[in-house]
Figure (cartoon, one colour):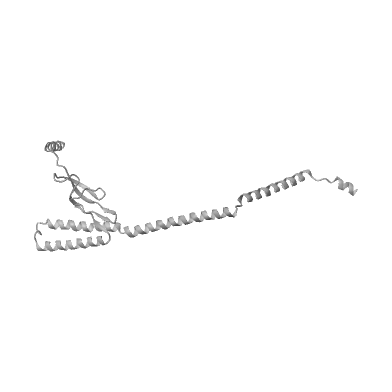
Amino acid sequence: MEKEQNSNIKSDPVEEKKDDEATSNGEISDNNIEDKESVKEKSPEEQILELEDKLARTFAEMENQRRRFEKEKEEAFEYGGFSFAKEALNLIDNLERSKKILENDDVLKNSESLKKTLEHFDIINKDLISVFLKNNINPIISLNKKFDPNLHQAMMEIEDDKKEPGIIVQEIQKGFTIKDRLLRPALVAVSKKPMETGKKNEQNKENLEDK
């Protein structure tokens, strides 16, 4: 009886199928992992080359950063006072304006008090220029030189038959440079060829008609 019962017990085909699938899937999964690991594995030489490349890139980036820092530091040291120097020029301008106002004052003209005041103005102006020179701030020499758009700004043209066109004949406001940079351009008047009498009269006539 027991033998018959044992012989009648059969394995479930569905369970056998699941076991087979699990086994086959497990084998495939293990094989895939091994394949991936074999792909990822690099030879010592390749690993060394990769590390050397990373180190070279890191050092190059560090060198670039160092150079940028050095350049910024140099510019900050050399041109850090650029804005201050530009503002300080207003002191010189105000001194010049005040000097001209006093010189044109009918009451003060030719007086001893005016003479002493102007002398003090000159001393202050020279002291300021001296401080500028010590800090590499130099005035632009303009008079009787050729107009240079990098240094000068033309405010007007003056007819002059003795000079070739484009020569600076008047300095309206002094310009300055700080090291190799323009702090502010010199405002100037430049020479031009005189107009012929006929053309000049014709232009004057046109100007009158326009008015």
